[in-house]
Image (cartoon, rainbow, N blue to C red; front, side):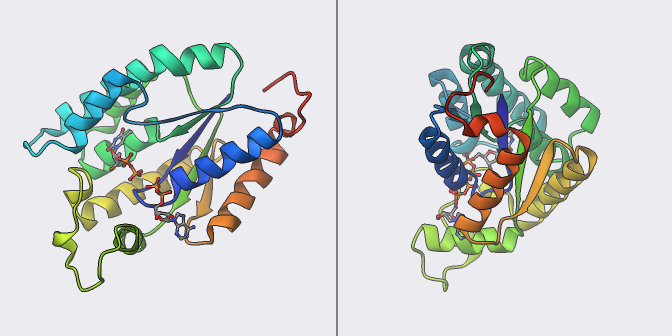
Length: 223
Ligand code: ADP
Ligand code: TYD
């Protein structure tokens, strides 16, 4: 089964994936945890183009590079793992593209849907945890993560190409996530990411216990 984690940068996705991975392992399930963009060598090279590059990039180019990175990850790792019946935890997936390139950059949402369908090989997540956080709160986390004094200005934090897009961009991306959560209310579980790391983890585990109880019994056949 495919479980995705979504939310703006700094909302706690990688922290929660790490905790869930440990928790599932303790129950005898070995999940495959991957991040987007990246996860395999070619996709990591595309990631470097997207995040480290300083060149100006058109929004369609950006969309297609994220899609190319995804297509490669799906083809080589995710699809085969799902076919073997494994649990895959993905740090970002198609909802990121809708939120960032669709709502954030303003690319037509029908185009985004088509590109997402191609890049994902038609595979949809079984469940998505959306960690909701205000961009302002995410920025405060960035300061403490990089151990920067709060006197630092927003423009002085060492940011990657996406993070440099500014607060307004992140506000639009968050609106995109909120719209997705409303539109796909069965698949997307929205969690208040301002709560403590442990509280968020507990909510994720409680949701999984309720929706996929077989994950928590080691003798499980269906994962
Ligand atoms: P993401 O993968 O979504 O960018 P991270 O998991 O890397 O987010 O978290 C970003 C920073 O915020 C890290 O320093 C992490 O320790 C911290 N953090 C994560 N979750 C919480 C939380 N619920 N409360 C406070 N800080 C958090
Ligand atoms: P990353 O450092 O992995 O994100 P985070 O800070 O949340 O851990 O950076 C990935 C960046 O790429 C992030 O800013 C979101 C962006 N992104 C898109 O714009 N579109 C996409 O389709 C994906 C997968 C990511």
